[in-house]
Image (cartoon, rainbow, N blue to C red):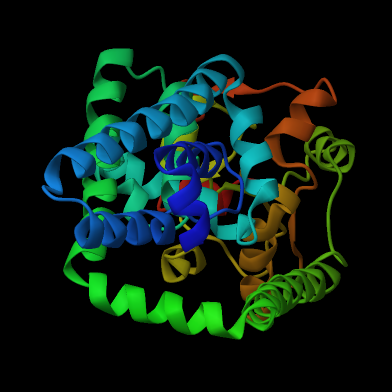
Length: 328
């Protein structure tokens, strides 16, 4: 890495930060630290070069983030789903980001780059929620500047230690690269194996949209739980008619409202219905005889030509409403 930095300078920083902002698994913080250390050791004065690298980093970050912002603004839910399918933690990345964004709004972009996965989903989510471009640029630019400053500052403060680490790695030569590559492969393989094991366990029980519609038409409507986070409901402000809003983290509230002998169908905005499948499993372990996720969620329901209702309209209610336990 040291040789690459010395040879290509700020150009490497620009490409690395841009690639990270576009979603490629290429961490840029180590590059910033190495560049900061190199400037501290070899540039006199150091601050003009540091400011130049900072400006390049912010520009590259804004460029990549802007692409996702406009993708979110144009394609909304499809952009978010695509991003989480690329994530190794796609069952949680969307949920966590929706909740954080719902609490803090677009201001979360000022710190999002310090939280793994948060920036990658928060940026298109801001676009999907039609945030204003000036506000997006202001908070995203602030976040990029803070993030790059921390990386460069760490390099400056620990420049001697960084130099020692790079020297040790250079002595190991190809062996160091092979060790890092092997660790990365093992990590990705382990996460993939865990996800496949989870999917095999959760795939057993699903209900198709047509089957749910048939139950409703036959007067045997189950309790339908919409466990999408509030932020995602703002992006797609529709529900399956008769569904109740619920938070899978508040399991006691759900159990206090929905009888154990009631059939339960759950849908979320997660790829492969992972959050819905998790909640269904929790309910079954607590005595619910028939709790299943809706395959494909509300998107599959809509794609099948089945009706949706606007949030806030007649029939919209949440956990704690007695109608959920009494109807059907």
